Every structure is written in structure tokens, then in C-alpha cells.
Amino acid sequence: MKKLPKFYYSRYMGGYNVYQREEPVNNVTTAKKIDRKQSEEEAKKLVYKLNGWKYEK
Image (cartoon, rainbow, N blue to C red; front, side, top):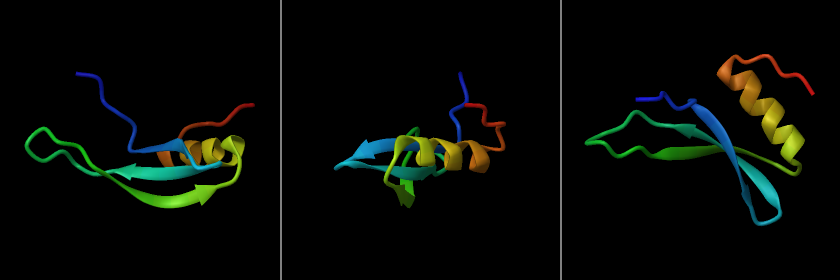
């Protein structure tokens, strides 16, 4: 099974929400919103940083 990244972003009402995945319980994965960015670029940079990935534009 492919492991999902702990942090991700999603478009929502003209901006981008950044979410943190919770550990699955009974095969159900939930997430909580931790931040909101106005641009996709800002959200992507934050997600890369939080996941410990190197960001290259």
C-alpha cells in the first residue's frame, strides 16, 4: 500500500487550505486544517516544507 504524505493542500473557495492527515482508525483517514494560503504556490511551498521535501520551482 502506498503511503500518503502527512501534509497536503486543496483548493477551497478561492484559496488553498493546508491539511494534516491523522492516523487511520478502522481504515478511515481524517485530516485537520492547519493553514490557509491565497495562492497555490504558497500552499505548495508550505506542504513541501512540512513534509521535509526539497522544493524546486
